[in-house]
Length: 376
Image 1 (cartoon, one colour):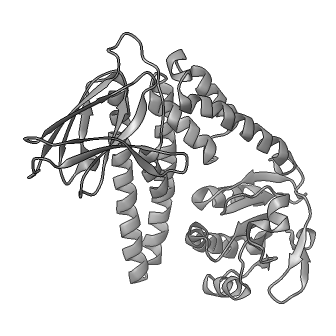
Image 2 (cartoon, rainbow, N blue to C red):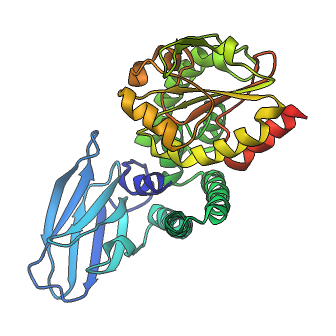
Image 3 (tube, rainbow, N blue to C red):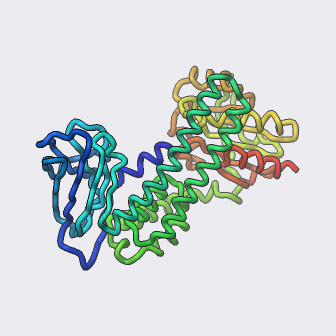
């Protein structure tokens, strides 16, 4: 989640505006012992997520002013020479006011234009959720170090609930702000990270205002929708309701094991790897579920996307994964991963007794709830 939150401040967009002065004027006020002549850098992000300078100015008596064209306004970034951090600003037509403490640029206040008001309302709300997430992660780390398994499990459930709350917050924000550049950026991000299905993204895109549909991120959404639809067409063979394709692979002791041989009344196909931190974090929860329901008919077959046999076997032993495992040790080139269209891990497929896929990518309490339901 943290990655997800950090990525929100490094996205680039364009928005068309009407009935405003030509170009943008950014008036900045900096506090905190800022010497006259200190350089201010205005930067954008290129297609490879690398910053590049588009203009510079200097600070005089704690203030600076910089202007530029805004026929197609962009999300720009304000940097101060030799100071960590930066402030994102929507460079749209009009006068924009920025005020910040020199050493806290990430928490600057920006106002004066519609898009900046919407953008910073989003940032303020998302930061509050991010702070909660980091607090839970710190508590989980402390509980892990002290060996308090009950607290770790409780915090893991709390973290999963917060992730769902954050997703719903973003979706609600998009629906409530169809006139916001940030809404288009969030739809684009959701498609690219597979957090939003193409059908849902299409509905959100359709609800955007005509002005926002003319922006670069909105145009990127259409491209992403085309790519997503192509992926979904390819993924029909492993969609919910489809019969899971059979496969086989080498086990840790060198034998060959097929899905059909490993199936139970309920079967989890778990794509993971020793190097995958989210997989390793989730493993204790899967172990708990397996120990609780294996005698009732739950089987698991782990498909590892590791490269090194020793790493794979050590992770199985360290995490006490006592179910079936296979791996070709071929990373994402693994034939089973390609068969199931797996492009990111962890990824899970839950099968009923007939081998039909009934759920995908469940974790934490949702996974246990589904297993319990299927085995009743």
